[in-house]
Image (cartoon, rainbow, N blue to C red):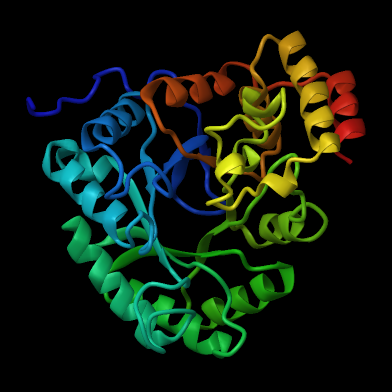
Length: 330
């Protein structure tokens, strides 16, 4: 493969948003490597996806220690992508990783202890061939470990220069408030919160979004397409090659009810009238809120990635469109 040379016009069309009260701007659409970049996937496919993302202004690549499958393989493969040319642009990239879910056997390979977080980040840096990540997350709250220990580890990771910023993921509003307070004591700001947020999962709206706005913390939404439900994949029920049909991932066949399919069809009708696909509209709907810094998409092909980027062409909604959407998803 020839050495990768990035598109000189890569910053022409992307929308960038300030991440809370920080110096960081994130692309409105970021690329997550949760699926499709593991050892079971085809390297030539996902290196093309990564290059196409950066060529179109996606500067943020989001990973975690156990992304794959197998665990660790997404980071290893991203390290290979960096070595094959993308790494020449390291100072133009925001690379994040996380620890908090199951990673290795025994009591120190899971949750939120200082030992686990420190060891996990060291492993992640080796897998990717990096000296530091831009953002390191506590991937989920640990009900057994004191929040002071988990956040203290994050603060020390910043002081050690192994991460420039820290974030939290999957923390509810009360847990978030406690985490932010501890980080403030360490004089380390929380840059960003990564919750699950979509038209079909709106738990962040009543309390978490206002809290993040008040505290100056950015938000990046994962699963913005509800594991594929908010695409044209399920307009006619469950395709045999879909995640729901296989029931091997987080979207189970039992979740794709007749009521959900009916609502997906109604939302699709609104999207078509807007001149968008359902996926484009679902991303735009999240980005209509200036408290949402970025939405995190996965991509199994270059075409799917480019289709999702079209969401940026129409981010505005009329009052009637918003009311019609609300009547369906409330």
